[in-house]
Amino acid sequence: MSPPAPPVSVPLPIPAPPPMGLRETDIIQYDRAHPGGWQRRNAVILERPLSVVVDDTTYTLLCTPGADRELVVGFLFTEGLITKLSDILLLRECPESPDVITVKTANAQDKPRRTLLITSSCGLCGREDLDAMVAALGRVESPWRVSVATVYRVPAAVRARQPLFDLTGGAHAAAFFDAAGQVLCAKEDVGRHHALDKLIGHALLRGRALGDVGVFLSGRTSLELIVKAARARLPVVAAVGAPTAAAVETADRLGITLCGFLRDEQLSVYTHGWRVAELKGARAP
Image (cartoon, rainbow, N blue to C red; front, top):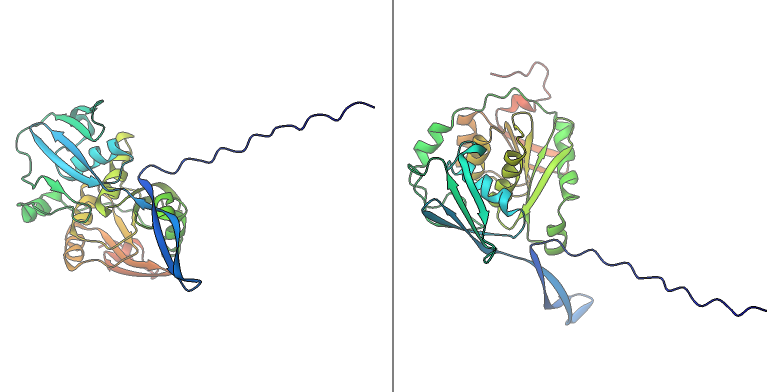
């Protein structure tokens, strides 16, 4: 009788690393099942300064690590520091300091005046040329349309692409969707406007025009997000939260379809509703 075969050693699966942009910390959790509290590990989203040296000016973005190049390209574009990707002559991450990116542009003069710290909560604070900036954007004339029923499906599709939010509950998302409701790309960041800049930068780096897609936002819609959408020529902005009055007025002025309170198969349309209208005979003005 032959001796029994030695047990086969089966390696344990290596767990996937957590997504960039978070760290773990110890917390004390209180709930009904544990009124005295219990200690556990919890993930929190990172918010770190990224220094972007553009020609002779340094901008500090308080953002979440990840997709830094997309963020910088999107920021340069939506700030009006460049008008096309070829305006960037140099974009280099510092090997000694990963939180510093150096940029040289083709038009180093006549940059918009701006405070140098851009926080995760405000994307336009410090601009001194808001009225002139909006006036120079021009109307978004895209004839693209999408059905209300399709827009209803977008939040769930984006939600499946939010690993940072799943782990931390602290990330905003921005995502492109097409007329079939397919999510083409999604980006996360602690800041709403940073998430949108990452998304727009992603498209610019791939030469993707945006006149035939909509953009989904996970929070409220403020003026800065409409300005960024207008620069990218995005025709439809659909958000989970409410818009501000300035966002509504600017979207109306610039020809952007603005939707809010997108949740549980309901939707409020504030401007240029012909792009999503289900009413018979609805057409562009």
